[in-house]
Image 1 (cartoon, one colour):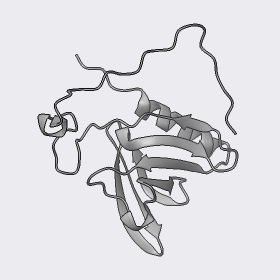
Image 2: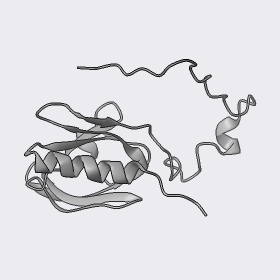
Image 3: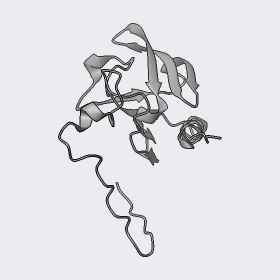
Image 4: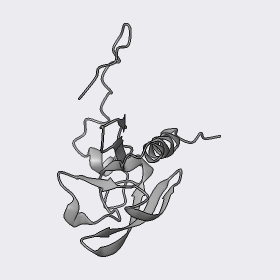
Length: 143
């Protein structure tokens, strides 16, 4: 049995916390391949979206996708974002939130997974992940 990622649950919780505190929740989304976002607002492969209830309509943070409608320059647009593409959710007012790793669950723009044999044509095979740090874990405050 495959388990569901904790990421959508954390996104829902932080979004609810922001809303309850009167803060404005923002999502930072890594735009890769074919995504239903306004491409004219994508900068450096990322888009920042206001997901407050006053800025969007029909917001749904499901386990696989985030969907809502929002106005961009006066034009209503339907937004569909894979949960794996969300790299951060934070409050605009105080910057508190959480960052995530990009997860490619849908493959690249051509529809082929990024780990396909075609993407490894250079012959060196899959990359080894960096070694895990040892010792006591520490947290660092970033402002």
